[in-house]
Image 1 (cartoon, rainbow, N blue to C red):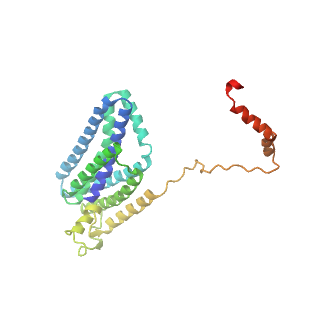
Image 2: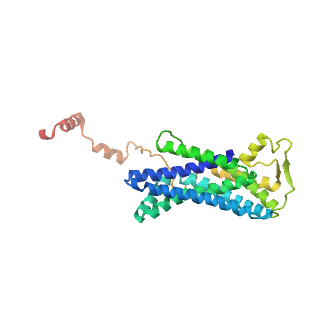
Image 3: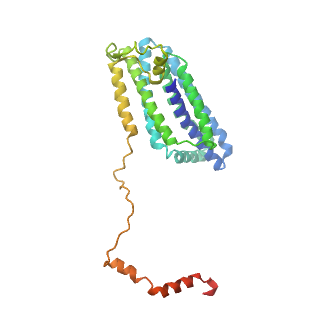
Length: 316
């Protein structure tokens, strides 16, 4: 539940920030009458996301057990790929998101009302589809319980409230730090989803090693206990994990976490920034002599110049 809360909070806040930028730009540019088109695009994005989740649930329900496991395993891998791309994209494009959306809105306003609806729908629908796919895989991993849906709904509700407060400037939030730490949490959650996807493919017979366990701590962490349920809901932790699951989790979480927290490297063609230093001239250098030659000789010349500058124009 907590992992899906992070998904709903982060994805919901991204969508809320996008809508806030669109609304603020239309209001400031004198196109308040076009706000209804933005809300129509948001409603379309929500409808498409819910429909996508319903199609996934209906399609998987009509399959055999092996087909369901294969379908769930493949979609788990796809969901992890989307979430990973989203984490790194938001880290890279957060600074230019506002100007990029402004450019799209200008182009949409020039093209017409339909273009503005589609701009809002695409901007919000991307987060909605990613959320639907990731939540669906979490529901499959937890055994069709309502906990993932509840956590995601609470996260989205908190994101909407937080986005509205940010728009009204009632609260301040360091978005860079927020997306950094939620991104790190989602990397761990995505690692659990990938591990469970590998388990689905093992049960479908596509991957071997279903009975080759790396560890079994079912006695210490019973699946029905509150802490076992918590670990399962947050990290998709399985007390009895195979070597394929453990290897997939480590192969994903460790390198992605290192890349995520690695400082951005300077481009090869970009010279390093060096503070400007004033060149010190030697006593006998020609530059020093030239600068001295332009100075007025004596204090009397400096005094006359200052007195002349203090006079009013009609006294000159």
